[in-house]
Every structure is written in structure tokens, then in C-alpha cells.
Amino acid sequence: MDLFTSGLGFLIVICAALYYYTRTVTSKVNDQNFSRFQRVYLIVYLLAMMGDWLQGPHVYALYESYNMDKHQIEILFIAGFGSSLFFGTIVGSFADKYGRRFNCILYGVLYGIGCITKHFNNFHILMFGRLMAGIATSILYSAFESWLIYEHKQRGFEESSLGTIFANAYLGNSVVAIMSGIIAQLVANTFGYVAPFDTSLLVLVCMVALIFANWSENFGDSQAHIKQSFISALHAIKTDKKVLLLGLIQSLFEGSMYVFVLEWTPALTVESNANKQDSSNPPIPHGYIFAAYMVAVMIGSNLFKILSKYQDCEEFMRGVLAASAVSLAVPFLFPGNQFLIFFAFIVFEVCVGIFWPSMGTMRGRYVPETARSTIMNFFRIPLNLLVVVILLNDLSLSLIFKFCVGFLLTACLCQFLLNRLVTAIKNTKPTIDALITQVNDNNL
Image 1 (tube, rainbow, N blue to C red):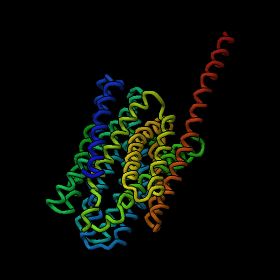
Image 2 (image 1 turned 45 degrees about the vertical axis):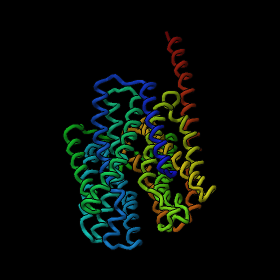
Image 3 (image 1 turned 60 degrees about the vertical axis):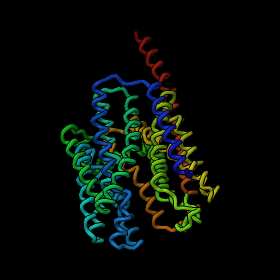
Image 4 (image 1 turned 135 degrees about the horizontal axis):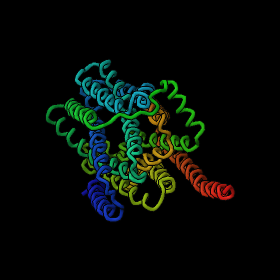
């Protein structure tokens, strides 16, 4: 048994034990209304994520099967990120004015159109599909969360239970990712490379139908003009340091994460493995490694539940971001050491599993409701820029990871500042309350 398969087995055992442990030590919400609300959201959200995951493994292979060269494929990928950067920021912001439910439905429609274009061996049609997919991605990472936070507050559930939903969402997302990879491979083997996109289209149709049937509509500021939503979002970022710091942390971490997704394969591939005929150094098993990453994310989601029981997100995320920076330093500190690099990448994915529910919880606390989706799409601008720059420049692997470490250390510094700011506000509030009480007593 090699490093990667044994590593996957070990991680599965840890994940199972941790999952059982969290069920015994974390408090359960015994509210049937909350349980139903969580179930309705998670089913739709996980179908939305499945629609995305099903497409990922075979995009490059499909383009290659259409006899496109490397440069054409790179242009198509850049178009997707560029579309998310420019058009996605605008369309994703429609959620605050026209409704989060409407935007989630729009996600299914746009991504479905992108799936249909995969049937055509035509560069311009495929480019149109990538543009639609880029816009859809911006909606996926803003409108669904915005809908959830508003409904959660509106229905009067406990604030701590929001973190539970986020943790379960990202735990389920990891399971869905593994299942999607298997399903995509099976249908691709049977019907060809376009079949995973047809499967994704069916999943997206089911998701849209469930939204129509079960979700109510909610808005940010439906009376405001789109331009006003952008102005409100910029004002919130400029005037509220908590929102600004949160945006920087998200952009820097997620930008590093997207770059990691593009670069983990060459980082783990020992040079002698390039020769696939060398039986002593076979090519790395991408499927097992991807599964190991997803299990590591599940471990992180379970750790979030435990950590949040004893500390606020603002506190423990300092250590998580520091650990993520150290883990991505390993590829340039110990190049060619496959064991250490794989171990470091697993640590990074555990940090990813903690990061997602933590950021969702903190955004729920600090991002203003009136322009929530717009602000969240603004946060995605730097990370899309980062990925586009990496794709456009032929940087060395070592330099790429050094940039990532720099981004993550900056994010860690921002998290320290955010925690200090929040702590100062908490310490000030009792003093103000005491003064108000004293004034009231004196008036009496």
C-alpha cells in the first residue's frame, strides 16, 4: 500500500472517530422548526454544489477531446475567472435588489446553459458557456449564504445554530464532492466526456424545482437602485473595519486556496514520476489524493464544531490561518519530499474545512444585511484577480507557493486585528451599559 492510499485510509478512520465524538460532546438543537429549516437549505445547497462538482473533473479532458490546444484551453479557463470577476460581481449583486431566491434560481439557469454548450465543438460557443459558468459561480458563493443568514435571523433561531448549519453544509459538501467524482467518472466511461455535464444539468433542474417549491423570497434593500447597492457596499467596507478585515481575510485565503487547487499536482509529482513507464515511480493517484483532501475538509468541519464550543471564531482562526501558511511553505522548503508535502497539504485542507464555516459565521455577524450579496461579491474580486494573474504568468512553482504563504500570513495578521477589534468592542460594551444604568439610577 503506497503513501496516498494508506493516508486516505488513516484519514477516514480519524474522520469517523471525530464525527462520532462531535455528536457526543456538542449540544443538539431540539427545535423541529430549525431541523426542518436546516434540512430544506442543505438539500438545495448540496444539489447546487453537486451541479458544480460534477463538471470539474472532465472540463479539461472534454476540451482536449475537441482537439483544442493548451493555449485555447487556458483562454477558456481565464474567461471563466474573468467572467466571475467582472460580470459575476454585477449579476451576483442583483440578489440584494431582486431577491436571493431569484438569484439562486438564476444560478441553476446560467450553469445549465453552460452545460448545454459543452455539446458543441466550437470555441466561441464553449467560450459563451464559460462566461455563463463564471457568472453562476459568483452567485453560488454569495446568494445561497445570503438567503440562509436572512432567513435564519428572520425566524429567530439561536445565533450559535447558524455555525452548525455552516459546518454541516461543508461536511456534506465534502461527501458530495467525492460522490460527484465517482458519478462523473462512471458516466464519462459509459457515455463520453460530455455525460458529466448532462448529469449536472439534471441535478440543477432538480435544485431549481426544490427552490420553487420550498424557499421563500428575501431581499437586501429592494427599493435601492443597483448603483446604490454598490455605493452602500463600498461605504460599509470603508467605514466598518470589521467588514474590511473580513473581506481581506476571505480574499487572501480563498485566492491561495484556488492557486493550491491548480498547483498541488505538480508539487506532489516527483520528477522521475513524469516517466509513466517507470514502474518504480508510478504517476500519482489523483483520485485517491482528491478523496483524501475531501476527508481532510470533513475533519476540519468537525473540528470547527468542537473549537466553536470553547472559543469564538475570531480567536481560533488566528491559529488556523498561521497553520495554513506554514503548510504551504513546505513545497519550497522541502521540494521533492513527497511525504512531507502530502502531509502539509492534508493540514491545509483541514484548515480549509475550519475556514468555511468560520467565515460564514463571521459574515453573518458583521456584514450588513442591506447589501450582503453585493459585499460578498466585492470580496471575490481580489481572489479572481489573483487566479487570473497566476494563470497568465509562467511563474515557478516555488515562487507561486511563496506568494501564497505571503497572502496567508497577511490574512493571519488581519485576523489578529479583527480579534483585537472585536474584543475591544466587547470590553467597551459593559462599561457603556454600566454608565447608562448609573445615569438612569441618578435620574430616579
